[in-house]
Length: 178
Image (cartoon, rainbow, N blue to C red):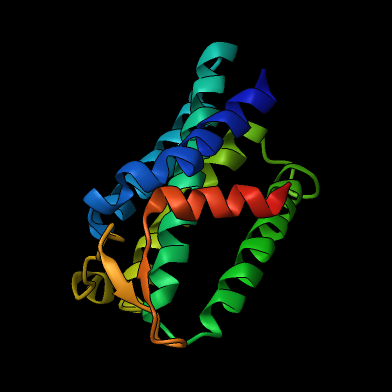
């Protein structure tokens, strides 16, 4: 049950995000990320009922799913090496999170519930970094992408007119896979 609570919400968000994410501003998304992260830590840290703890894990998964998509999209406003930094940061975050919890509960002998509540400073760091990196300003300047139309276009390489439609593109993609 814990694996489903951890994986399913993020998976559902990642699969359905192309349908609705463009309608939510980056600042609102970030607020949701932080709210779900704080909720997850508080719920898991204070809960004594397994079902409620699983709900906290699901909140963490939602925060992670929204966070991954949003932060990766924000890298398009920065130089190309930003994606590498983001990728390295996500790996380091997983390692440092596990090590910090292990250090708190092992050598420092802090109770696991208390250790989880101590980690509430992390969402605060997220807010601070979001503001300091200027992501909120970069997000405010973003432009909406244009939808691919079914209109006839001219191929830049050959000069020939192409009648492209999304259906033809999907047909080509699936044809090439077989």
